[in-house]
Amino acid sequence: MDTPLHFPLGKPVAITLPRCYDGEAEALCALLDAGAPVIHIRKPDAPAAQVEALLRQLRDAGADMTRLTLHHDAALARRYGLGGIHLREGALREWLRQHPDKRHATAQGASAPDVQKTQTQQTQQGNDTYTPRLSAPAHSWEEAARLAPLCDYVTLSPLFDSVSKPGYLAGIDPADACRRLRRRTDETAKPIPAAIPAELPVSGSGSRIIALGGITPDNISVARAAAFDGAAVIGAVWTTEWLGTGPQPDPKNSDRTPSPGNRPPAGTPSHDISRIDLTATLSNYQRLTRRWQAAGGTLQFISDGDPAAAEAFLQGGGRWVQLRMKDTPAEGIIARGREILALCRRYDALLIVNDDPRLAKAIGADGVHLGQNDTPPDEARIILGRQAIIGCTANTFAHIARIAQSSADYIGLGPFRYTTTKKNLSPILGEEGYRRILRQMARAGIRLPVAAIGGITEEDVPQVMACGVNGIALSGAISRAGEIAAATARFTELVAAHRTIVTP
Ligand SMILES: Cc1ncc(COP(=O)(O)OP(=O)(O)O)c(N)n1
Ligand SMILES: Cc1ncsc1CCOP(=O)(O)O
Ligand SMILES: [Mg+2]
Image 1 (cartoon, rainbow, N blue to C red):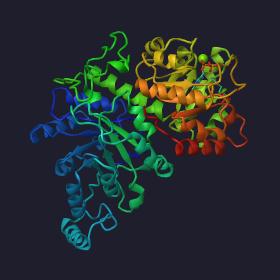
Image 2 (image 1 turned 180 degrees about the vertical axis):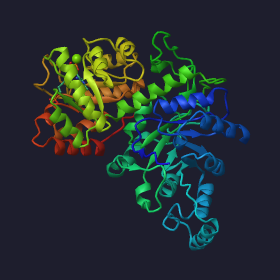
Image 3 (image 1 turned 60 degrees about the horizontal axis):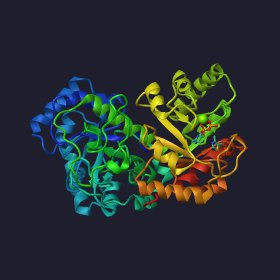
Image 4 (image 1 turned 120 degrees about the horizontal axis):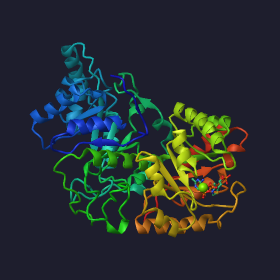
């Protein structure tokens, strides 16, 4: 059992519905195939026999049991070799007392008598090799701080009004979360193994916090911008109605997002799940994933196709490259694109292609960036499919309002200042323009991630990030840097340290 979890998680954690459904094992296998790093099996409304039947079906279907986490029942998790167990504080402390060889009970706040007891129990238990991931639920920062050192990650909820539990309203302020979490850049990049070695220092496992509660494709970018290490989703994975009373997905393009003004009021039962719909589930999960990934591209390098520069960016910690080769014939772009894609894959980074979805498809890239005069995003979606990340350029709030009605996943907003990298530059927005437009977005409830672009230098980063953008796209400041890897590391650090969330 050694599937490592890399933080921040590259895709959302899926959590099951509280009851058991026909076809659920198949749907969970499909979510694992779609790359869900972990699925939480949470079944408070199902009899134990049904939960066990589900685990049996999953095992018989060849599911990767190490990526499953079972809530509540540690014994059942162990019997089926599940990679993780999720326990409330009391049960977690009890489990730790009974398994002192798995964790650092003393350093985690257990009292001296507790430790003596655990040592006795350890001797009684003999050699036990089951070492699951441990996670626990928290509903306040105080609880999260208490529980995080005891386990591998904590789910902190509710960040937004719940989708699956009507009336369960947001309790964690994303802007406050951002202030608390944004400086933890050192720990989050490190992988932890599924089976935690006993010698793992407590401090190394103490900081992973996964956002939970009401997360949808519309707001998942906020969880990412707030520097949560992952996002866990229930209702928005399983709904077949796509969040209730707003415009229904266009049957020709089920990625169309409902307009913000048409969402049901908080607390309205927004979905009615009486069966598992595999197509809807996968589509929902892909959309959540795209938005989570798009919001994580906090530093985007706009590459002119030089593989050495792209590799230096990746070596410096950059994880998002946009290939922009303006005057090169298609064959040349495809050849360079494939070369840079191979590099990106080695570093687990994303590659998107400027302007042309067909070129992006030929390269096998993760998506495309489209300008005002390029292919419309919904057409690009049809060409590239539901997993592709689609970005769109905006120079005004009116552009953003239009893009928000499409299946685009992020916005490139600019230009921040004058640059020679782009011909026919639109009017410069400057700090004032960014602040105005981001406020308008917040008021309109549009939470598409925004990358700032245009002549941005290292000195600009604090000011640009303070406007509330998710990240920054750069060409010249990276490609003209003497030491690209070092410059990338500095930019990454600055962007992470100055994240801000704008509230309406
Ligand atoms: C992240 C990002 N934002 C904006 C642009 C500009 O795209 P576009 O308006 O299509 O201009 P060209 O890049 O095609 O000259 C971008 N490429 N990336
Ligand atoms: C592609 C693009 N779109 C608006 S400004 C710009 C150029 C970004 O490059 P630089 O960071 O060198 O100004
Ligand atoms: Mg373009």
